[in-house]
Image (cartoon, rainbow, N blue to C red; front, side, top):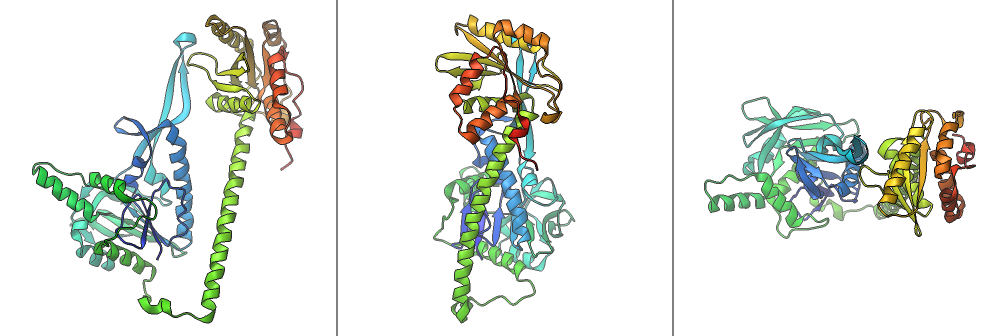
Length: 475
C-alpha cells in the first residue's frame, strides 16, 4: 500500500509524511492518515482571539482554500474505494478575517470594526457528519476484534482526546465501562473506508513524557505538546526514518486488513511472479496516470480562469468591501496605482504619474444621490488640505445592482446630482462602464493609458462604454 500522513507521523519506511496545507494531492496513495489537532499550527497566526487561534490575515485565503480542496479530495478519495483514517481530536476551531468591515460614525469619528468568523477545521474538511465532545483518557475498550488485537499489543501508545457523540458507521472503540464511542468505521458502497480512531502516539512522545516527568515529578505533560515537537522534527514530504516502529507497522497492517477483510492476504513473494502482459499493463497505467495529472493541472488552470471571471462579474451586483476590492482591481488593470484609503477617508486612493484621485464606491439598489457626490467632495477637500495638491474625484456607482444590467432603464446618475458634480469636476462612472473598460483592455489589448486619461479628464458622466450586450455571450 502507498500511505500518506497529513500532520501526523507513522514511523515506517513505507510512509510518506506530508502536510494538510501541502499542494501535493492524496490521489497517489491508497491510505491517508490525518491528525487535525496539528494542522492549524502549520499556518501563521495572529494573537489569539477569545482563547482560540486566529489565522494571520495573509494566511486566511490559504487555509480556507486548503479546507475546500482537501474536503473535495477526501470525498473523491473515499468514492474511489480508498481508506481515510482520522485521529479524532477535540474541536479545532480558529478565527479568521472575513474581509468584511462594520463602519459606524462618519468622517474622522468613523470607527471601522474587523468582522471575524470561526470554524472547526475537522468539521469542515471531513466529508461525513460527526460531532465531538470534550473528554480524554487512556482506558479504551475495543469492540472490533482486529482493533482489539492491535491496541492490546501497544496499549501505552493509544489514548483518546475526544468522545464521538455522533459518528458515521459502527463503533469500534468505547471508553472502558461505558458506551461512549471514541472510534468508528464507516464503509461506503464503493468500498471506501472512513476510520475515525483514538490518537496513536509516537514512541518519541512517550520518551518526551518520561523525560518531562524525570525533570519534574510534579509536572504533568500534555501529549499534544509532544506531538508538536514530533511534527516539527520530521514531517517533510518524503521524509524517511531509519528505524521502524513495530506498533506503526501493526497499525498499518490492521488498516490493510480492512481492505482485504474476508480475503486471503497476498504473500510477500507474489510480486516476483508476473504474467507476460503485467509489465505492459503497468506501463500503460503509468502513461494514463501521467496523462491524468496533466489533465488535472489543465482543469485547475481553467477553474482559476473561471474564478477570475466570476470576480469581475461582482462589478454587476456587489456592494460594500467586496465591490470596493473589485473596483480597485479594475483601476489597477487600467494602469493606476490603487490602494485602499485610510480609515474614515476615501474608499480608494489612485495615482497615475504625478496625478492623484480619490474614489467613492457605492453599490445601490436604486440610483445614485447627491449625498454620494457630497461625500466624494468631502474626501477631495480633506486630501487637498493635507497638502496633496489638485485631486480628482471619481464616483463609481453600481446602481440598480439587483436588476439585470440589460434591464436597468432608470438613470444611474439623476440630473440634480449631475448638476452638483459637474462644477466640482467629478467623474461619474458606473461599474458596468468600468467592467467594459477592463474587458476591452484584457480581451482586445486596448491601450489602458488612454482609458485612464479619459477617467481623469471627464467632468460629469462618462459617455459610452454601456454596451452590456456586447460584454457577454448567451448561455
